Image (cartoon, rainbow, N blue to C red; front, side):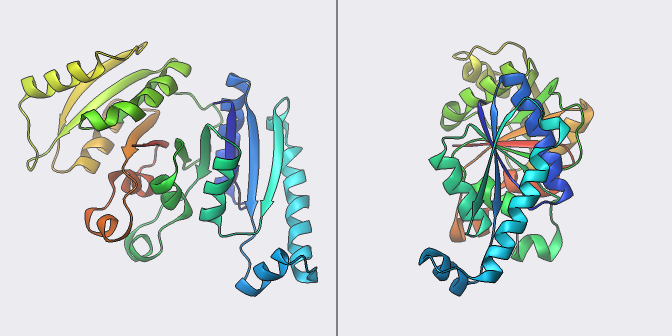
Length: 274
């Protein structure tokens, strides 16, 4: 976690994310890239690309630069290398491009979540980034003045395809010296006997060096509810999930538990792309 990207729209939730990123950067001798996206009308974007100076565009750009400079002077960023980027692009596209071109290790985003029709038809930039990002994405919902991860829940079915991203989960837990709580959620539609579940988790973890971990089987009516209730029961500091990054109709009909958690969980959520 040496290079951390924080997209900001200058909202309070973006500030929550930046404060957490600052704490992570200080613990890992890391640096922060602070990104602001200027989403312009199509005609204005063409003008920028052709090098034409449009007063309105320059006004918003200069205003954003001033705001970024103010943020970079905040006390909680003292001692951290911070760079600023302003991108003329849709937020979702720009976040992914900047993360790739700068080889970031972690994206930290603030989110207030969504529900009902807003969740179905609009979604959020955080949800889209979670679905598509190749690097881990940490979602922060509220102010965390002392961000610590003592108890880290990672819920999964522990299939073989999870093993590749799971190494990043282990690295994340070990860096925070957290107890990694591996949870298999048993539901009526996908029930496994305890002995089978334990065997699956034992075989899955055999090839990894995890400093501290426990395995759990939790019964619930659906997976999302099981993750949330189990996390509440142990007062977890962080919930982790892997995501397939489904798109299009496949995503619409199958949904994504990771994205549901981003919208509904009150606790921080970190996702890892399969």
